[in-house]
Image (cartoon, rainbow, N blue to C red; front, top):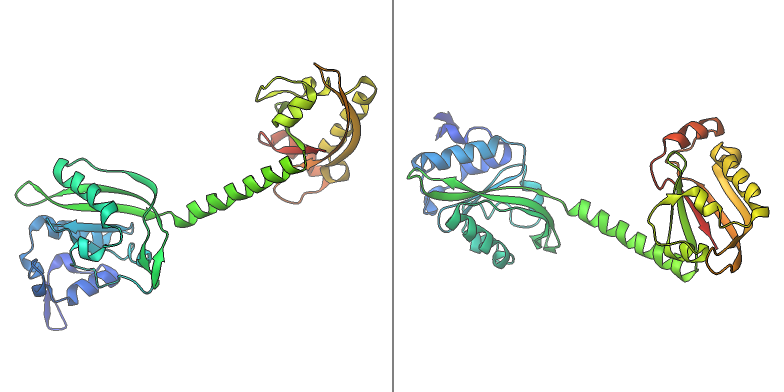
Length: 300
C-alpha cells in the first residue's frame, strides 16, 4: 500500500488514470464490497489489470454484477450519462434500458463458464442526455474467485458505431445507385484490364443475350458488337487504357443480341476507376495493376 493525501491506497488501485483516481476516492463502505483492501485477491488482480490496459474493459463482479470500468471504456459512456454513477452499482440498476439484452448473456457465462461473442451488436443505452443507438463487438468471459468458483465477468469490447453507420450509409448509397440505374434502364459493366475479366449487370447481359455468368472474358462481350463497329470500339478502349482524354471513354455503337439477333444502338460512357488524379503517362501503368471491377462503363 502507498500513502496518498494522508490516505492509505491499496497497491492494486495505484495509477489507472481518471478511473483509478475515482476508485481511490470512492467510499466503498456504502456498498456490500466494503473497503478495497478487504476485497478478494482475485478481484484485486482483475481490477489492477483492467485499470492498466488501454483496451476498453468492463467488469461485472458478484452475483448482483457490481460494475467497474477503465479509462478506455469511459468515452463510450458519453458526456452526460452514466459516468461515474454506475461505479460499484448493481448492473440491473446501472443498465435498466439494456438489462433484458445483457442479462441472458451474463447469466449464461455465470452458469456455464463459456465465453460469449457478439459482433456489431446493437445495444442502445442512455448517454449524452438521450438513448443512443450504439453498436458493439464484445465478449463476456468468466473471472474466477478465490474459492475457485466464478466470481465475476470480464467484458472486453470495442464500440463499432461509427464503422457500422458508415457501412449502412454505403449500403444506402449503393441501393440508391442501383435504383437510379434501374430507373434509367442503364446497363453497367466493369472491366479489369489486367485479367481481361468482364462483369455486367443482368440488364446488360440480357441485351447481349449472354448467360448469367458472373464473370466472362471481354472478347465475348465484343462479339455482341456488330462487326463494322468492333474495331472502332476496341480502339476506343485501348485509347482510354493508355490515358487518352484522361482515361475517359465515350462512344456510340450497335450491339446485337446473340440469341434473338435484336439490335440496339447504345451510348457508352465510362472512365478508369482511379483513386487519385494522375497524368496520362501514369494511367497505363496503373491500369495494369488495377483491381477487379476497377473500370465501370454505363450503357444507356
